Image (cartoon, helix red, strand yellow):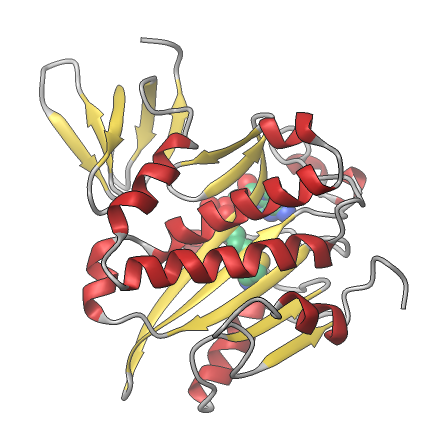
Length: 272
Ligand code: BT5
């Protein structure tokens, strides 16, 4: 086994510090359609919370709103089947926890690889993208459904870890980036990320949303800056004032009103 393979043994080793993730099921694919689809199938087939699907490449990786997620070999693509209760779903979006865990996991892996300069360039872009030096490194997709057992959330994470920059489609190159490693390898990023996500998830499940929210806010440089937010039907402009208790973005408008943005695309338009 080479140092940078992402096989079943490497994925299982990455779950070693987790109490729940990977206990119900672990699947590792060289190539799959979408890890989210596969995790959904596993959960519908009876796999319990924490079932994990990892792929080295995807043929039909997707983002939000039907967008595509470019998934060439070298990236880390994974999905978790989760069973948050209704109270937890009302607290903080699990996707926000996913973004924070990716940021903190990548940060730890970069530090361990002796790359503090890159670690310092990581940021969370609301609601849950991870950027490196202003370009998109990772995306998070949460897909919620319900079955006889209650809510079923499939959380998908895509991170450009060992991806060569020229493996990304040409149109993404100006806006996307990769760690360009190794180091760190996908297995190293995975083993930093999974226990962090599990700890955040358990903390929020037990009611500890405020501390997690503070940690996420601290990693969002856009807070305190002027933003333009594209909503489903219109675009607003104002000051990104902070996050509310449920992770929504508060935008202070010029006329003194405040918008509570639950979903939208945020773009910075300069300092206040
Ligand atoms: C996301 O959507 O950012 C969520 C991406 C989730 C991908 C994971 S991979 C494992 C799991 N299985 C799946 O099928 N999906 C999940 P969104 O915010 O809608 O962003 C999509 C946009 O990001 C695209 O329209 C592109 O502009 C950009 N993009 C696409 N591929 C990218 C990549 N590899 N790196 C950086 N940016 C990318």
